[in-house]
Image (tube, rainbow, N blue to C red; front, side, top):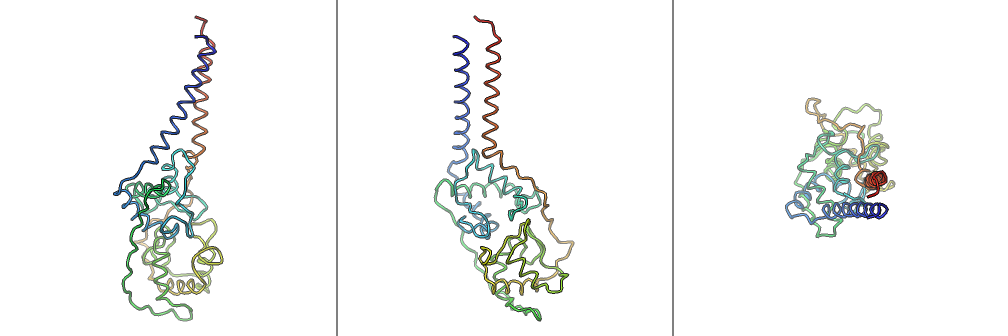
Length: 278
């Protein structure tokens, strides 16, 4: 076979291999999950993600997750975002390795559950927990708002990140002594407007969030009644220097794969041109 023909054959085989690799990875990552994975992932999602991304993944103060993920391996991309977060954005790192509360055993089914929306399969939405009666809370003097309604709002919107009693989880500790002349105004501003460059998004209606001014006032009234958390019991807070390693599972990974195959072709051409004619 002439060397020029062999080179073309090698090139075609390399390109065919690339497309097989891409298609195989995509199909493997889009396999139908089993019911056990969906239920466990749905439970983890409901307990940790729904407050920001919506119970059906349509977004709330966080991004929409019920969508198609433009990636060769969307499972790797979603997992990387969950594990390491996105620096400078409201998305914190959730893996225990990066200071978050979730184990690998919880993240794996969570990824499967999120990607079940992409494949168009039947959606599993966990039942909403029933809120039980709570003791009556006395308001803080000179602070407007209803702390009893605020307690309900806190449980529905804030406890996931800040802990059930303000002890801190993914978000900052709220059960503490506040050093400010008007703590209520400081908290209202942080809740309504968010904190730029941090995991704290804007919750006020004027900034695209779900809470009205009256609801934020009730939240503040409740937060100021939280017990001061003991420093000995504080959870480890996630760091602020997370690296985002998601591009390799998207178009960056495809570009690298193409370059690697191109390198293989170039080496094959070089070898063929140096061989003596048979």
